[in-house]
Length: 108
Ligand code: FAD
Image (cartoon, rainbow, N blue to C red):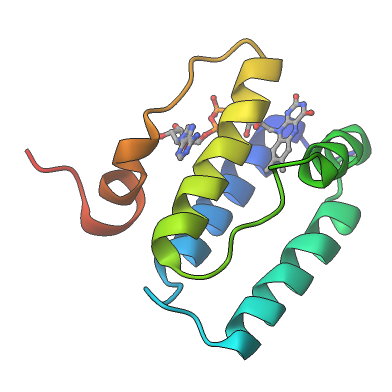
């Protein structure tokens, strides 16, 4: 079976990088495509317990993907990742800094 940690690290790199390349303001088509991608991703992610919990979290009130543009999608992705961090007892990431980590690089 795939190594859940290696898979997770690589997948978060992909997801945050994907978010970093999302336009500041997304067109209706881009918004639809991102919603569809996240919906399918959450069904197909090849760690079945992870996928099941992630889908449940996404369905809860207030946790629906926010796809109007990079700023809010980045914040949403960070919150999604923090939800998994909490579940696994890892420390939470400061979502004010997601863009420094994944797009612009740290200031220092
Ligand atoms: P990761 O959590 O993989 O993070 C990688 C890097 O991202 C960190 O070093 C940090 O620089 C940065 N980062 C951390 N938090 C954030 C954030 N909130 N926003 C932006 N950047 C951040 N594992 C399980 O054991 N059980 C599960 O149920 C489970 N569910 C998962 C669901 C999904 C959708 C994904 C993608 C992964 C899941 N994983 C799960 C894997 C888990 O999240 C970790 O990837 C894995 O434990 C390795 O953790 P890590 O400490 O190397 O850092």
